[in-house]
Length: 401
Picture 1 (tube, rainbow, N blue to C red):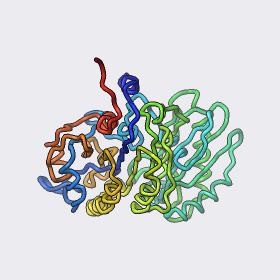
Picture 2: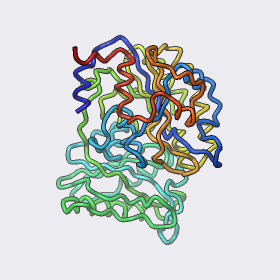
Picture 3: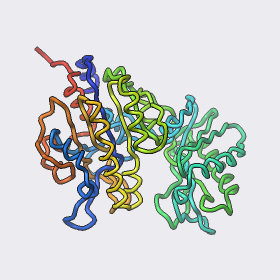
Picture 4: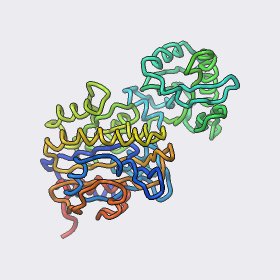
């Protein structure tokens, strides 16, 4: 309802908005009363920007709900993630430029490590190097299952895209990842009778893949998660009147950006510095930029507190490159929290910074969880960030007489 209302008020303007997403930004202190990763990091550039910004938190879904990256991104992009449910498999496929057909079912695949009893010892196979996983994907492409086509595409490190194509396939399937080690991966099960065929195909593929990988190290098994078909979404050009671009290295984030109508820009490498180079190169061509930084989440999920601190400091060092371009509005936030002490996504609100010439600055020269508690933005639904950014960029007309 609000989306349609807002759409009628949006007006064109010669202004530029930059949204910088540090994946899994929110954290927790290592010790009671201590500092979070963001508070521990030395961030002179973020702190200087914070002094001219409004601060607060975003809540991707609702109180107490730990959020996945897909719905977390949809929310910060301005959509209701409960209205638009999108499986990770579809996002991963779109992220590697795979053209999903209307009858395709996609899943995110993980190479994993299994012991002799078939129990998980590492859910990510030691974050297998991309070159190694690409070789394994080539080997698994030899698997054929009657009545369906199987497509495999490498993503990054241990991750790959798995796609089934054929008649009578449905995506209402359970995942095989038990999300813990010491137990065996689970079989795919149909959540509805019309998904029985898809479940049988997926299980047959897993069985044959594990047989081919047997004896290899560290990747001697696979898991599948996030089964999904192609979803339809409102487009940024239509709903927010923005010519939007996305800068991301990892497939899923490229996928969710493409899904909502952003142009996914080429990045000349895999580092954050490379992403900022892309931002500088294409700055004149777009009026909205989304830039994604994965390392904060990777360190959070691995329990690497110091690594997450270092990642935030790496981001801070690149920030002046954006500010030198004189953006009208800057959003710095995250799609969810990933505290290193929990080694997982969490339900905690995510720190948010909103900068712009028309923003009422809070005058707080620091960016961290404690000071965000004092900020004027409070704790807001993540989907409300884009309307605020549009307003501060002079892109929302007055409502009523």
